[in-house]
Length: 206
Image 1: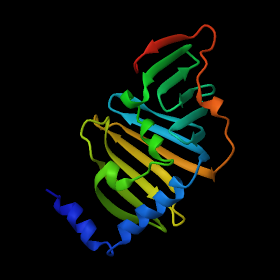
Image 2: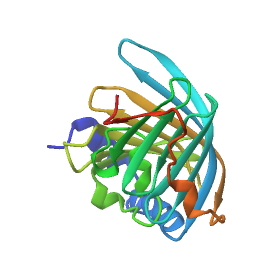
Image 3: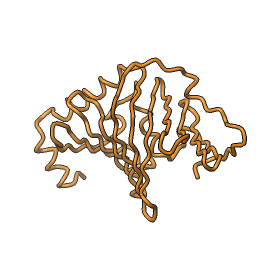
C-alpha cells in the first residue's frame, strides 16, 4: 500500500514529469559505450566513523567498472562484470566475490550503462526539486538486495550528479559526481585485476 507521504508527492508532480525525467536519464546512459568521471564517496554506518574517499570512476559496456582511488591512494574496486575485487594496499589484501553475489553498495552502479531501466529495477518512486535539479527516490523491486533505497540527483541535462545508496542496515553510501565524459576510449584490460605480489586474496567481503 502506498504511503500517504509518497502519494502526496506523486499527486503534486505534473503528469508525465516523472516519466520524462527517468526516460531522459535512460537515454543518456543507455546510448553510451563508456563513461569516465571524478567522484567523492562518503560512507556512514552505525558505530563506525564517517569515511570520505575520492577518485576516478570508469564504466564500460557491458557491466565493467573501475573505481580508482586517489584518497586513500592505491585503493581499488574493480569488476569485469563477473568478478569483483576490492584491493586495500595498506593491509595488502584483496577481497574477491562474484558480481551477482556482492553486497558492496558500489555494485548498483553497474546497471548504469546499457541496461538502465528504472521501471524494471524499481517498484516505486518519489520526486522533489533541489534548485534546477531533481531528486528521484527509488525503492528496488527485490527485498533481497543489500540496499533498500536509491536516491538520484538528476541535472537538467539528465546527468546523475549525486547518488545515495541506503543499505538494509541503514548504512548510507553517497557519491558526488563531476567532470562526466561519455564514450571515452577505455582499454578492456583495465577492468581485470592482477594480484600484486605479496597480497593476500580472501573470498567474500570482509
